Length: 102
Image (cartoon, rainbow, N blue to C red):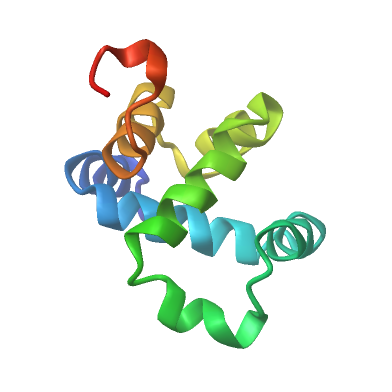
C-alpha cells in the first residue's frame, strides 16, 4: 500500500497540484460537485478547460473554504494539512479588504 506522506508533501509544494486535488475530490463527491457546478454556472463539460483559469480555481477554493466541514473533509480525505489548504486559497484568491493589500 502506498503512503499518503509523499502525496501530502507534493500537495504542500505546489498550489496548482493542490487545487487539482480539490477538484478531483469534489468530482468524487457527486452531491457536493453538483452544488458547486450549480453555484458557479459551470457546465460539467467546461470543467476540463476551466481548470486552467485561476479565477475558476479561486472560486472553487472559495466554495471549499466557505464551509468548514467541507474543507475539513477534504483535508482528512487527502491528508492535506489545513494550513496548506489555507495557503493555496490565499494563493489563488484576491486579497480582501481586511488584508491591508487593496
